[in-house]
Amino acid sequence: MSRSPSFSPRTESDTNVDPESVQRWIVAFCIIRFDLERGQLIEECYPPGCLTPEEELDVAFSSFPDSVSQHHNRSSIHDCMFFFRVKRRGSFVGEEVSSGEKGPKRKNDNEKGRDSKYLYGFVFNRQRHDERLKRGGEQKSVVILSHSPYSSLFKPLLQIMGPLYFDIGRKALDCIAASVSTWASPLPGQLMELPIGNATLKVNLPPVHSLSFDGEVSFEESASSMAPLLPTNQSIPYGLFHDSDVFGIFKGILLQLWLLWELLLAGEPILIIAPTPPQCCEAVSGLVSLIAPLFVSVDFRPYFTIHDPYFAHLNSLQEGDTFPPMVLGVTNLFFLKSLRNIPNIVSVGSPAPNSTRLPFASRASTGRISGRPEGFNFPQLNLKKFSPSSLMNAVKLRRDGPLCLMTEHKEAVWSGYIPITKPDTSILNRLVDAGLSPRVEESMSVVNNEILRRHFLELTTNFLAPFGPYFRANTPSVGSSPFVDPPPLPAFDADEFLGSLSTRDPGKFLSKRMKSNWLDLYRRFMKGHNFKPWFQRKRAVAEQEQYRLWRQARMNADIQEFINKSSELEVVETFNSIERHLLAEMQQDKNSVDHSKASYHKLKGDLQAVFNVLPKDMQHLLLMNPERATLLQ
Image (cartoon, rainbow, N blue to C red; front, side, top):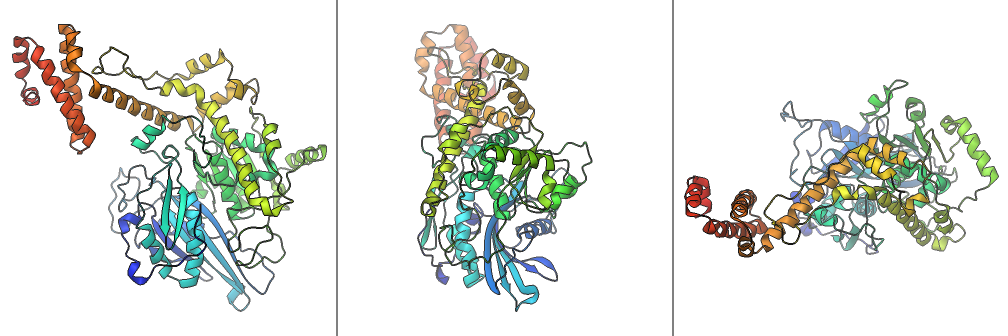
């Protein structure tokens, strides 16, 4: 992301807003105040009426830290940024919802591929401490709500919008909305330059295969299936949350990253505890980013509170009940007691020091850019040296269990899961320790994140490679007819797949990094929540690509050459095949697709050419069908 060093809002005459253009990117802008008497209140929601009453409650409760940071100075301002993910629910006032419909009908909900099941809320929270105010302070949050997890866009947008709102008030929403309404439609997987006031946001959006799937394969996703397995340009995201600071948030438990990767790959439930919302959402998003390019199907909540309606279900689970596949990021230690059934607990981050925080506009001691709020950015510490004492500490932590966090925060992982993947110490040795050099801290963090993300991208890609033959599109062989139906993709059988895989080793990359029981990881993956949606999506993409290849072959086929070398029976079969394809193109032609029209005219000419060489008695027989006679006019 890059932007100009200053930002100026548009003038009144420039703030014309096209609501439909805004909603290609954003569901709503909300201003939420914490009222001492009435709790969380939505003061502004732009555009109005876009949230149900239930959703307003969910958004309001998710937009504040669980507790106010403690500041000992007489008057201070503390800003932080984080994001959450909640399910859409409820219905609008006066709206009739049929019994078979699970949620409310939305305005402007005609955008293909948009995730209408969840809302992502990106929060700029300001806590103002002033002893002259009631209870010594106040809180307010600026929230961007979207269907899309475009963290690389909404984080920098919040860095502009949050302070701007506290400077000029409600007018800031109009200014930002006016800029957003000028943006082109989102182009997943591409670099976009988006004007905002007198600034420009340059963002790489996540690829389409990492976004929600509605059963229809987009052209962009079909085209991306032909891309190389590993990117040559590291700035190109291959999954969600490519901008997350994996190294910064997991630096205290780097050896456990391979265990965490495996847990998420297999769809195991994970509870992540951190002292602050920015840290817990960074940990959740960082973990999700590690399994790219795999599509994430497990429910993940970067910042989860006891007010979330799903908490009641989780809290009701009895001992022995299976915990649903989820990744929960929390700051409230109450979850340690209420969610005792969750088998994997991760503690990350560092609690805020008791010393006085610097004001928002001052320069942080860690060397961060002046004027940035806390959140999505972590100071780097010296990489921990692995020693016998650290091993003893790990054993003690395991013995004490996660409830030891009730008295003191520690970075650790508690899990009964036995990993198959071994930590790659050669990767850890390549990481740069920039703790003693704050001036190069930020750039070194970028380097470390690229090293880690590249490694786990290779790890995931190599792990998924054996499934490749099931997604391989067939093309017509030389001399064969492109008018017949293409052969189906290979049928998948889990037992046959594992049997075939057991006859060969997992490949050089995986064999160096996995134990001898590596086949068990494939069994866990195929039983987990991520496998089926990912496999079905990849099959749909392959089938779409195969359809495109055969359709192009029909466009390029010389029908006369094919007729000359075919028998009479083959010519009849070709006529029937062309007729079937022509009817399919006529159905697509109703949508006025240009390439459908071109294919329609080509097939109609081919049908006439084949008809002309058929025997006269057969021609008369075919023309007895009125629909077929219309095609041959």
